[in-house]
Length: 294
Image (tube, rainbow, N blue to C red; front, side, top):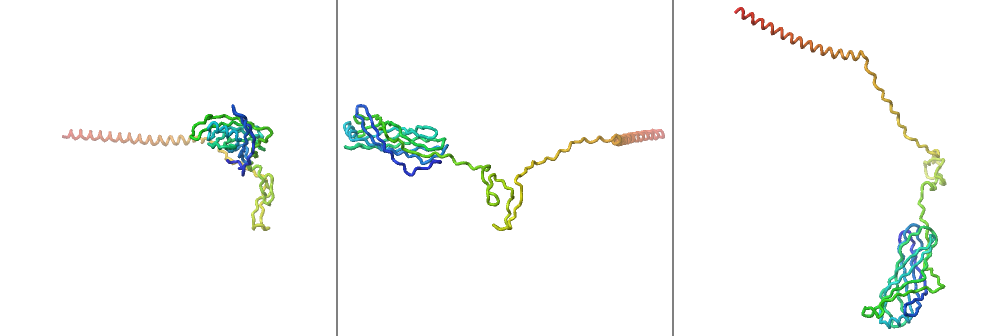
């Protein structure tokens, strides 16, 4: 079984009686023991895995005689049966395709064959009680072979079997349970500090600070039942104030200082140039004087 299912300890076999027909052959009775192994319970919304179905069918001595006449020593094949799941949400069809293993044909007496099948997985959407009923008809596909392994005179036959009227066709039942509720904090019952419970989880008394367990020295810190959350306050950003322009006197004083330095440099340059020129003229004059004495 899968998640969300409770396995059945042991499924009970249900006995059903059929009448099977085959072309050019008289109708024959068949008794089937069906075990439809459904779980005891499943959960809404959770997938139910494939369910195994086992069946044992017995036919009377006339079938054994007919098989001997066509030289059949073994019978194998398959069987298709439909179950109907009657759930709270409606009827759901569950087809089971069974396999019949290679079965020896007895020399006389009844013939018993077995079949094993599985049903498809299902998902249920509503809780409640559900039952599985077998369909009124089933189809069997038989292959007959000789002792050497080759096909008998009639190597294949398709047989249709119908339920005899007046039978209980319920082969299984189970419960569909709702999913487990997910606990939520908003609806949870929160124990109070005094051992009681508050439906909303709120208390008018604060936490208890114990001095010793169960002693009278426990101190109760009073609090309020409602908590006020404050948003962080962003300090205002002071406006940007442009700086006042410097006074005119300061600007003029600075300009004069720059001009004074520039004028001093010009004066020094002129003085140096003039001094050099005077020195050069005086030297030239002295040379001329010395030349005239000679």
